[in-house]
Image (cartoon, rainbow, N blue to C red; front, side, top):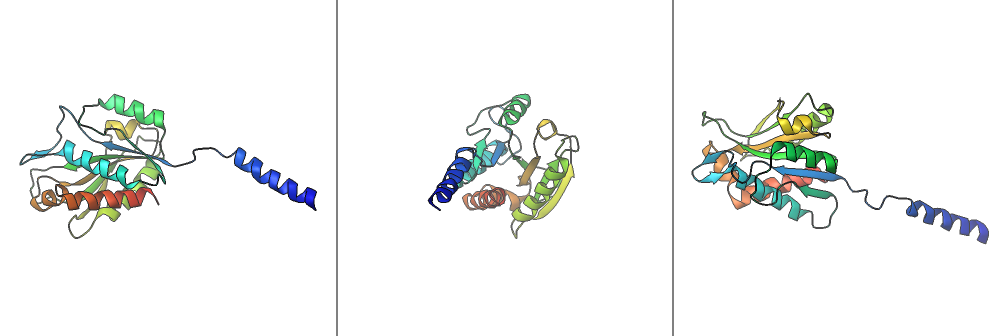
Length: 198
């Protein structure tokens, strides 16, 4: 019996020994624009800064390190689209979320929208993630928008499920007030984090 028990303990030890040391899911958060590229602008509010703030808040929420969150841009610097793709594909994440803010000549347009690319080999997974994320972020302050197909460079060339998330319109007064506020950015970051840690 002691021999059998010893074999059992040995088997458990071996199974742990061969388990990968880092089997966390890796999520890349790409804060759009940066540096000389301001993105959308309205009344002194800049897209590049809003999405950088939200990305930072998402990373801070991962205090226990349940998943690995990689910020492609954690400061105000310009990164070429091709460089973003190279870095994303080197990381080989489970999901890429590229954060953006919308703007429109139609001041009534509002809400959270997402884009995915049919040219991405993980199109179905990308679209499913985008739909679920839009639904999760929609609330009484941020209307539920759509998931649209578009061949934007980063999501088209990323070799992983990838989506662009537009977290409201700077051109819409209600959206702008929400997405530029500390509370609004905290809520958006919390919802995105809850989604990726599922």
